[in-house]
Length: 303
Image 1 (cartoon, rainbow, N blue to C red):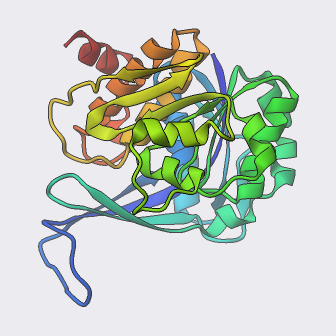
Image 2 (cartoon, rainbow, N blue to C red):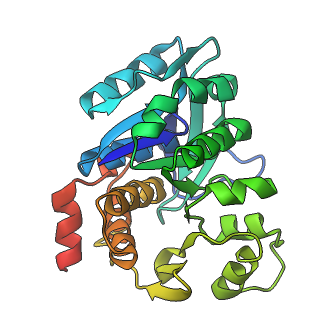
Image 3 (tube, one colour):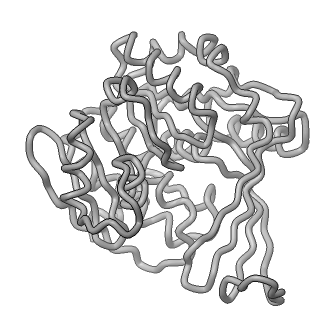
């Protein structure tokens, strides 16, 4: 299983707090930790832990965060030989996690803003050799589009995790084979506003006016709505033993889905496998420690 990932790396600076502060308020009693983050890197590590051969394109700075990132990828057996070392600082994400496990994140892109489509050109051999290319949107949009277009030109299946969601140009929809938004991201992609009434099925119908590929719409505790092959299927959530931190759940889901699709699983079984990976992730604090191995996923699927 060969997976190429084009996306972000960032240092995650996490503060666990009883609740989110209001404007002008200072809260004490927080607990601080720093760790690895960025959707591209998280998804690459998630897929590698589940047995895939993974190559990664991202950018880091000439700083301590960049050095520790390369150590992570070496430890996790992710091919980072194409990762760009930029002049700007490595991306940093500031994460607030409350006692309910909900998170709020602010990002300073730094080195990621130096990524260009030319970097994708230098990564084209990894894309051409891959069974699946995974792209997320914490990088400049032209870079993400170049990765999708290059994969499409080489006949390689693509998976777009549209996070954070932005409007896509019309031509890009033809380059996406599997789309994995959550509910709010799907609304952005369709042009729906926060106040526009639409349930999950209606949102997918709106997506269908511009997109013909597979939609895997994640709905949190309501499971997943899968629309592909001419029919919609609701996949029930996999129960998490406990909820500690939801920060890495989406990346665990995406990495596991990429692995399951690459090894040839049926779409619904692949989504259930991914849901189990996400359920495991919410039960562990921080992102990298929360990403499951094969035994972790298997244990939840047996429950």
